[in-house]
Every structure is written in structure tokens, then in C-alpha cells.
Image (cartoon, rainbow, N blue to C red; front, side, top):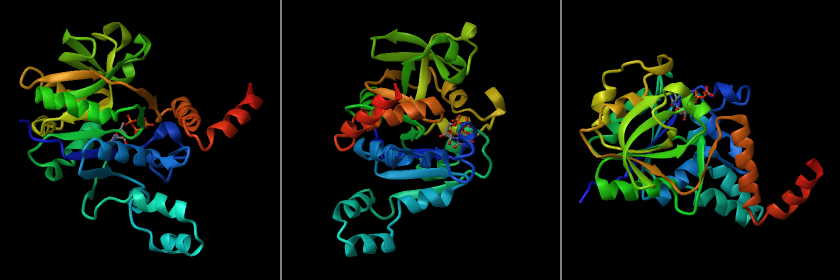
Amino acid sequence: MQKPVRKAVFPVGGLGTRFLPATKSMPKEMLPVVDKPLIQYAVEEARESGIEEFIFVTGRGKSAIEDHFDHSYELNDMLQQRGKSNALKLVTDMLMRPGSFAYIRQQEPLGLGHAVWCARKLVGDEPFAVILADDLVQSQRPCLRQLVDVYEETGGNVVAVMDVPREHTDRYGVLRTGEDDGRKAEVLGLVEKPKPAEAPSTLSVIGRYVLLPEVFDHLERQEKGAGGEIQLTDAMARMIGRHPFHGLRFEGHRFDCGDKVGFLEATLSYALDRDDIAPAFREALTRYR
Ligand code: UTP
């Protein structure tokens, strides 16, 4: 019986330079897809995957995320008085049990590995999930839940992977794989942002991870990797061969919402999936062909 995955880390300390000026004073994780910020999709996915404790590693714009998940007395009171019960339900249903959210500050954006390392004391000695909210996954079964299922089977690290065009390998952590059943691939090697010609495969890690706490021992070295940043990939690579490690080709569609076109595509897909707005939206789209 494995220790359960109860905690999730949400690194939200990045600079979001690809989305300036929108991200000048607001974290990119607060960008809304249709009517919900990216970070709320991520938190809901975690909750539906069995996560009970939510740890945010923040940088700038901390207050926007904290306020979003906080009880807003004035707003609730106003919605109640005006009889806007649907809107009231929307903002109250999303609240978690008091005490289940924690915020820690990454003082400098030194890389994703550094952001995760900042959460080490809150995570402690147990397996945990990492969710990058700017990778939005639309799926029947929550993407993180799919990873947790594999963790429960294997007891080791599990990362969500997908095949990317070879010319894009330099944007991802890329796998060298061993045994592969078409869904779950054993990880034998991991390289961060390899040039297309040097990539060991095109199977690339996206922003969902289930990690053993031993990763913190490797992050502790604070070694800089690709782009001069402290990379999570490098710390994960040091765990290969010591613990079971798998890449899961998850079921679902991933949108890179840190990228403008990816973000717009997500907006389109989520809007077309909403019964309340899809008919009018489809109609509006016919004017842009
Ligand atoms: P990205 O590589 O997308 O970087 O980070 P970024 O700074 O957010 O965005 P761009 O490229 O400048 O537009 C991947 C994830 O890691 C987090 C980001 O918030 C994002 O969720 N991150 C990155 C941190 O929390 N801290 C860091 O130091 C770096």
C-alpha cells in the first residue's frame, strides 16, 4: 500500500513574459478561460483527484490568487441582497475547507525546480503532486487523477507526457524510454529542452507530476541547468534507476495557456463545450470565417 497523494504544489511564481502586458501586475495563472482563472481549473482538477492540501508557491500578484480563493463577505452579501443566487453559488462552491490552502513566497524566480523546492517544508516526507496551471488539460477523467492511478500501481514518480512535433523538443523536458505499453512508458532518461536533433524521443513532459519526496534531496543542490534556471527535470533525472519512474500518455487535450495561440485555442474549446454559451458563440464565429 503506497502513501496517498494528499498534497499538491502550484508554482505560480514565474514572470509570464510571453503574456505581457497582461501579466505585468497579475500572475498569468489568473488569466480567465471563458469565465474562470487558470488557477481555479487547476485547483478543481486537484480536488477531483483526491488532493486535500493546496500549496501555492507565489511571486508577484500573490494577493490576486489569495483573494480569489478567499471568502468575500461584501460580494456574497451583495449577491444575496440582489437575489443573484446562481452567482452566489458559483463563488461559494469554489471555497475549500479553512486551513487547506497555504502560500509560500519564492523570493526570486530562479526556475521551476527552485519553486518546488520552496515548498519542501510544507510537503514534508510524503509523495505530492505538482500542477502547472498554465498547462490546461481538458479530459473526462482529471489528468492528475490519471497520474495518481499510475502512482498507486507503481509506487514511484509519474509525469504526464505527450508526443510533440520534433521541432518543439527544445521547449520541454524529453524522455528516453524503456518498456512502453503505449500508455505508460518507463523513464530511462530525461533531458531538459534538447535541440530537435539531439532529443532522445519526442515524448515530452507537460505540467502534471506525482513525485516522491526524495526529489527535494536533489533540488537541495540548487544546481542551475538549461537557461541558467534550477530545473525540476534535472532533479527528477537523478531519481531514475533509484525509484520506479513512468511517463503517462494521459487521456485528454492539453492547451499551453502560457502561449497566446494555445490560450486562445483553450478559450475556443472550453466555450464550445459550454451548453450555456456554445450556441451563441458558434453563431458569432460564423462572422469571422
Ligand atoms: P514557464 O517556463 O512558463 O515560465 O514556467 P514563466 O516565467 O511562467 O513564463 P514565460 O515563459 O516568461 O512567459 C513554468 C511554470 O513554472 C512556474 C511558472 O509560474 C509556471 O507555472 N515558475 C517558473 C515558477 O513558479 N518559478 C520560477 O522561477 C519559474
